[in-house]
Image (cartoon, rainbow, N blue to C red; front, side):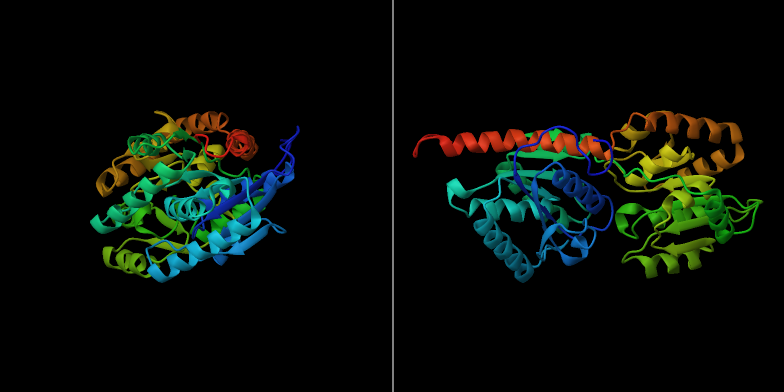
Length: 391
């Protein structure tokens, strides 16, 4: 591939792939968009099925169908989603269905299984997330994982811990790196304008870029920021992103006496990273966080939690890693970076060097093309088998 959507070499002639995705606004939506764009450029017939809000993130001109796949169980909505998926698949005769997330994966698996055997496409499921907190939510999530593990032809996992989990459930699983998009370096004038927006010159900027959701641990960051009130100069904690916890986090910052600037959703993340003195990723779990990849590419010093696939990304010298949920450890690590310029420089240089080894979006497209070719060949073999033969 010579650029986004430009894949060199022949591809399977009009192989038809259908992406099924749930409600997604961050890395998952970005990943599916890149795969859809790249696969279409490689000559595949590409369709994307999912909620309207997710479809808005897909490449212009993509064949799409709105399917109400939510992020929490809802019997009426889930039944409607199943019906639309099954109806569409019955009409269109796809070669491969590639679902993203276990809720989308389970619905796609049930829709595929409901078709006549010779009309069933191959099924791939990418697992992007670990189970949520809460007993009932984890129970439902595990049921969805089991459906995916037992019915998918292949399960692709975004981190090693997800791979181990899905294999323990019996899935034919492999790890699949989800790369961050390559974005152009921001202009110096843009960085300067952003830096002036974030606070007075001389005050260190501690930046987090995340959805305002429980998984991201921003409540812990706010508690850590309250411990910096007596530092001179006092750091400015900046949070870019939006989400359902916005009101709660504003209240928490006010009650804690933490100096936190909430920027809302931003489309100039590279400039924000360039303007930051340290990037903080306080998540309770991550697979292969896009913001960690982007911060590493920009050479910023990073403080992150040692969860999921984060340590795989950063290695031992590309970030300071602390336990999830430990505000004191987070505050201490950020202070260590701010107080030691040589430490900050070493972390940034090591992170940038390691980021040069990361796969790019074109590598992910090549990888899924190979997966689809194998699944399509296997499916074609099944269709050629005599009626009544095994498989």
